[in-house]
Image (cartoon, rainbow, N blue to C red; front, top):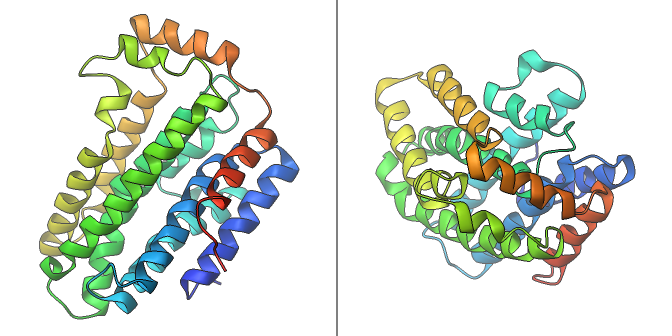
Length: 256
């Protein structure tokens, strides 16, 4: 059953993290990041950071359920029920050569660039409110996401001690710049507006985001060499990496 409350979302994410640790599944990386974000949103709702707390919780739940449903369908080997964007992210979980940072970016790419716009439109229709009235809270949740994501990426230096090398060769076309969360946020809102006004454009958007996901793991030239070097010195045990990401977020906020 889909989660109905933000607490149920948090519990479900904790289950995914626990299963990932047990099975050495790299899916735990994004789940740990997402758990951290969801806990922070819960705190923001409790402290009145959003214009409409109950609506914000509902948005968080609808948004999270898209990731959880995709994960459940994928683990049940029902690819037909998974968007192309998430298929790209989940397929890469089997590849040892993909950096932890790339796994996180793949998850954010599918979830922000595709799922977020769909969730916002669903909430606008469910609450019978103009889409623009959600813009403030939309920006607020993305501000939280951006801040916490960069904290986690910074903390990845514990996992990838040479990760900073990526920035040395990264130009305007690098994966770090292409998938900057500010750009993802703006793109997600434009997609939401298009979907709200023009109807079903999800399939074409999914194809575009799938292609973007492919570029995250298709490095060329100096960046390809740099990624290879970073990978040589990166931790190789998924359970240990997931524990680091999970334990780091547990020190940030008390969930219950």
